[in-house]
Image (cartoon, rainbow, N blue to C red):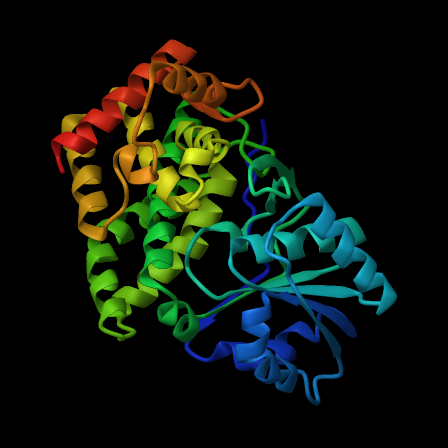
Length: 363
């Protein structure tokens, strides 16, 4: 199997870089559909439009309805065609960015994404997570390429609610452990090949950055400061985690997340929060060394990520619910099978229970 490394063509990070959006995106197309939440348009729409002045590209700024669903992608694609757009920009959180990527993919045009928070590794990936209109998980849409441009304005990301950056740390927490599992099992990666040495190194760097700078970055953001640790964590949450997961692969942590995402009880928890708990489940399934589990639990507690089912909103984990969660996480089409050990629903159920007990014991 060939080794494949995939990444965005350009990654741009720093305070104030959103004001340069038009300058960078003009190289992609002459007529740009820009997708953003209504509140983002109200807050930054004028600045976004000004960035296109003199760029040679026209912009059509359209509100995003809030869900990356088939119906929303269809609606925006129709709008893009009405305005003869030949490039797409997504501005906002993971769902807005995934929607922009999906629209661009179905139109076969370039795409740029501008995260307004460091809440997940979605921006740099050739992947869009499609949800049903009610917000429940539907499927992964595998795209032909990563975004042409990822533009991360750290002043905007650091001003977002701290919970978003912490959730991004939860998503990034799984990156190295899932990468390591896929390398050991020889799993097919999201990029369509086997793991590269480069992507494993980036996944490891993601983990090391979280452990070194996560708690410091959270404290700095809470104090309204952009420090080197904040810049490092934003890069880890976004670039390192994104390349790490896509060019190495996903495993049990995201399979557990997907199962939790289909439970209405966990609807208020964010993607990265569910992934953090899924990481604990994966470590249990792998029989990870106690020192590794302790390090992860210590980190999770230090930054305020959930480590029990109750933290995720599941207060009454009945045997029936646990069985359903475990069976869902072990769906053949999901990523549980990328672990180097075969996992049955019974094993997954016991690991979920064990991870929950570990979380309670360290509370």
